[in-house]
Image (tube, rainbow, N blue to C red; front, side, top):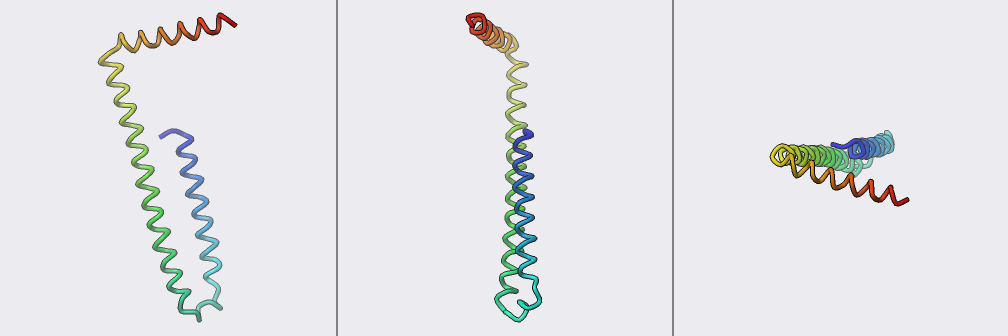
Length: 103
């Protein structure tokens, strides 16, 4: 998984954790214990957070798997067709050299 995707997932997870802490802090006030709906709301928040965590973990695992699969496919292609890869690299290098030479 690339660094930027990892950072984005980590930042989103940290933001979610902070939001949950803030909500739990608000809902943990003892004065609210007398309100029956608060316990139900606390349970719903806990279930939702658990579901979001599970979904985020699955999404991160899927993204990592797809990145590994793409890298493996590129590696296989480079090993199966080394002259094509070398030719493509030569063509890109020549094109860049031509473009930079015209400056």
